[in-house]
Amino acid sequence: MTSTFLPDKRTGRGAGSPPPAADRRPPGRARRRALHWLTAAGFQLPALVLFMGLVLLPMLFALYAAFFRWGGFGMPSDYIGGENFSRLLQDDVFLGDLWRCLVLVVLSLAIQLPFALAMAVLLNQRMRGRAVYRMLFFAPYVLSEAITGILFGMIFAPDDGFADQVLGKVGLDGLGGEWFADPSTVMATLFLVMTWKYFGFHMMLYLAGLQAVPRELTEAALIDGASAWQRFRNVTLPLLAPTLRISVFLSVIGAIQLFDLVWVTTAGGPDHHSETMAVTMFQYGFKRYQVGYASAISVVMFGISLVFALAYQRFVLRRDLEGATTTMRGDGK
Figure 1 (spheres, rainbow, N blue to C red):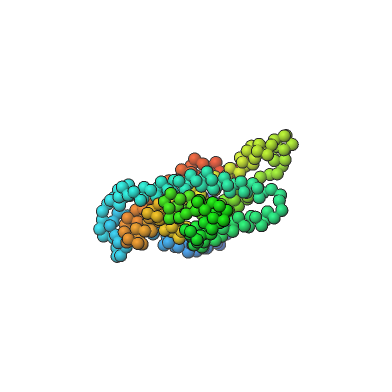
Figure 2: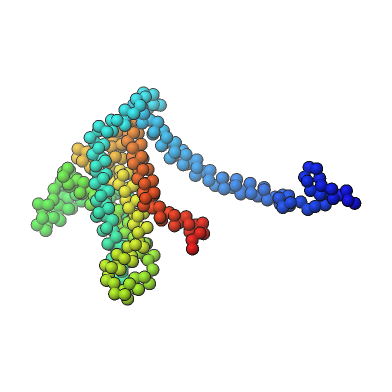
């Protein structure tokens, strides 16, 4: 009788002692867990394959090709080291692209986004037909860049364009001219087209943020005697700050990567005065067949975007991301 309770030399347990919890686990549990992971991997595999084939591998190949003098046919073989990158620093067109990119970023942050915010505040008020106005202001964003470029190419056509005809009828024909053909006016005209095209998107972002502001806070400020400007500056604007930061981020990244609207409207002319980095990359890669140099431009564009994104996330979006992470973990008080 007592020998049945002697400890087993292999397990160290008595023969009659119950098995531990790990041994009492249902035999199908491990199988179900493995099946769960296989199912998750099966759903993610197509997306991972597409990302690898269409995003990651082309990026790595562009980085590789940037160190070669390559015309785009066959595999790169004429290794030249960092000559393409040193050429960028001496290329007046590329340096001009950087300057024009900075100008577009400053104009977007100083004019386009404040204008979108003002329209969002206006359309957030109770007014007749505000849904129609929202639809009309957002409609340009739905149009493709190709249609927008062709449309404004006709509007700002010299002499017989719609813009010149309107100015002539109101006695301001002296203000008209070669909108896209004059180096002194092409960037201002292009920015006008960009504002018309993209401000509706930012306006809808701000509208969504404004509608999330608790009305009780603004009503309490009104009861305390705060003016409309004080309510906006001290109540609405701080609560709208996360939306504003996202809008600024999208605007800057869009200015860095701007291509299709410029290409359809001006193709970078006249004499490179409206060219962007993406247009220059396209010109060298697909018009002059200097794919190695175009790859170097693409690498620099990616580097600028990556550095800006990481710095912006680190110093500007950090508080928003930390709050979102805390909420997802369930640690919020």
